[in-house]
Amino acid sequence: MASLARALDLKRMLINISLGFNQSVDAYLQSIKMIVDYLAAIQSPLSDLELIKLTIAGLSWDYNFFVTTFLMLLGLKMFDDLCSQLLFYEQLLKYKHDHHLNVHQAFVTTTGDAQGSSITKGNHNNKGNRNN
Image 1: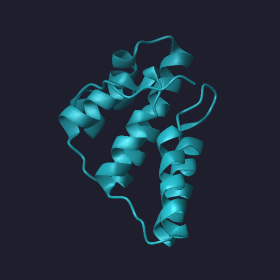
Image 2: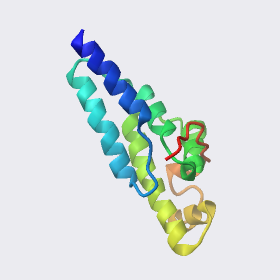
Image 3: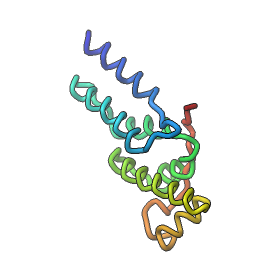
Image 4: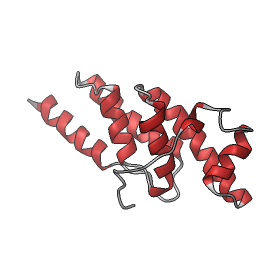
């Protein structure tokens, strides 16, 4: 019974995690992975699909383009794939900011063409944004 209560508490914590204003994607993903590891340790693991949904739900509006791309066009089904693409997209946002470009320009500039990376094959739309 105690492990069920702990699992529910950890899942509640996971649902409430969101990418903070000045937080890096890496720190955001590490906080998610820490809770996921706790859940696995008490025999209450989450599926990759559940992890993907929870991770996307906690992203800020800056990641709308990424979410649409990830969900609609890439169709990735593994949490690790989401993590690597999310870290890549964070770099695009930094490049965009540093070079005063829009996301599409940053993407084309950093990849060389629209087919240079798997992330270029779509857009993103964050339906699960939380206030930070």
